[in-house]
Length: 248
Image (cartoon, rainbow, N blue to C red; front, side, top):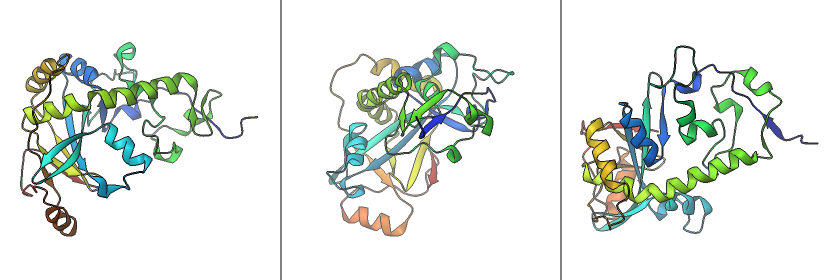
């Protein structure tokens, strides 16, 4: 008896395709841009002070990040490329079905499961209507996804790690070198579509070492700003219009 099973089946309401940014692998971002749609870039930084060095959560974050120079110190930077669906996904049809269903991103195939192993699946954190959770289809048991979903989640995590260096190098190449501090805020850029696509096209398949660019961190919280400045990090001014700074 599977008393801890979570049951779910998509009812085609389209709610999860609206009002969000959709995380993409590097190859998916290339496809998204090639179709003529916009991709946002979210950049955040952290160091060992965020978690104990031995913690599994730190190891997970470090695996999808790149070590970069920041002032007289080094920090880890994560770059997330995300399809712009702030009003709604550009691939959502009038009947609320996906117009690129066979080519939809991994995160869409995995939803509503969580890709981050440290975020538990919670129905009250999802926008899906109640009837979606009344299915006979088992989504996960004891927090573990069904085998098909588990394979997709593993694929997504591998892409997160393997794409990390190229994504951060693309950001630096485009001058997107101000990062927010992880769990404090998000620095969200909306680079010109053609510029980002050209940078991705150049980065994919390029195995050469990437230059060690200089990065800046923006923190609006005075106490955190002081702590990071004391650690010799290079701090950015708080008045830039190059990106959206979203405090968490």
